[in-house]
Length: 559
Image (cartoon, rainbow, N blue to C red; front, top):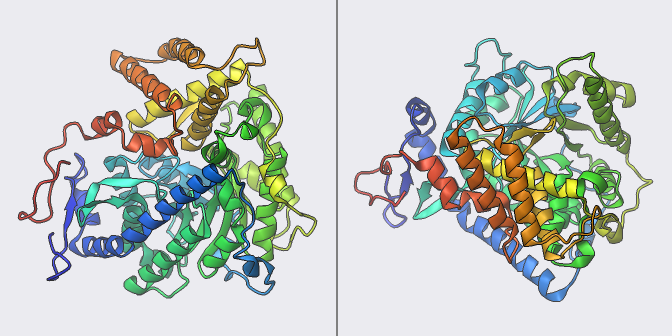
């Protein structure tokens, strides 16, 4: 397909289908859907670049000035106006007690099990829990298409199945396999556009969507961009305004100072805000990691939701949401229940998850996520025991007063050898998973994804930068120590490899991990770094034929 803007021609290039997914690509990339994607991306592409440049500008200002974030003076009128509220959510979103998290829909079997489960919702994840290979994106989006159009056998009708909370990629990700007007497509617009074009109307007609999670939003300007995209898309697809509802994940310390403004921008399309622990904690290193005052101690020993900076963030999120009529949801329980229900380990894990999730319920959250499907019913029971009704919107948390100091207070604590090795292992294994085309993996009884990989590699980078001493023996965290410990961890992990190729891939992952944590300047997102890395890209594109171009007159791209 090639047309330019002067005479009605548009320019668009698409990689050939991943092997075995030709039929899926034919379904997804119809002429009409491609025209819609072209128009969506062309309309908003420059605005996406602008919000990314605003991030760079803001970070540079903080670095040069030494300033700390605070609540914005320019938006005081929004925060002090008691009158405004977000629109009420549809009935299917009123009760959000337990969602399944980190569900990459390219995993067909797990997706089907989730659709058959008693969960209230499913976080259909193209972001943290997903590796965005072309194969995974196509397979995942097509599986959503099949679920919405009731093409899976023995699965409830979409109006009765757990509600689909679709999470497109974040703004930092690009789709290498589509070029629009000479530029790679923004990943979130590729995902959102295909999902809306093929599923939006059916979801709406069945009173089951379209509902979204929005990842890694850093400011109200980014929320405004999403709102503009929603308004435009609804108009283009003939959906009533305010049909789309979205939960924004507050995963960045800067966004914590703009929660009311983010809700205000999305007030006609809001399904509330969500708080998690690891991406949010990692954002402190991202924004202030070079400042010694923001040295984050060992996460395995000193960082949890009971610490002042995280507790204040959750309390403020609940208070902000409920005073504006919006739902507030908590993070994901990553622990996995051992299979034997009579074992001590099963009781121990269940008790740990119960204690942590009860803290969130008592703070006033309206729901949270679990990874393990076996935790759905115990956590739903916990909600019934400790909260009344479909949600806790009536809990306004007027007892809460949160200051900038509360949000920026780093917990006390040091660094342990165990914590350093654990972070190294998680970082290496995450890169190894990506090289294998997987967005998450299991390690020591829990699921690990890009959020835990972010905090792991962030901490190692920061501890090296500040030459932190180990509590155990006083050794300084240095390039040499981290390299030696990485080799040690590799010896332990190599025993799990089943082939020479697996061992080679693990060694490649370890080399890439060291490259990331030893860089002079902190790479903003590990996912962006990997998504632009030659080793990762070549592991996904080996064997691809030349680019399939949508018009034979178009020049072949290097892809």
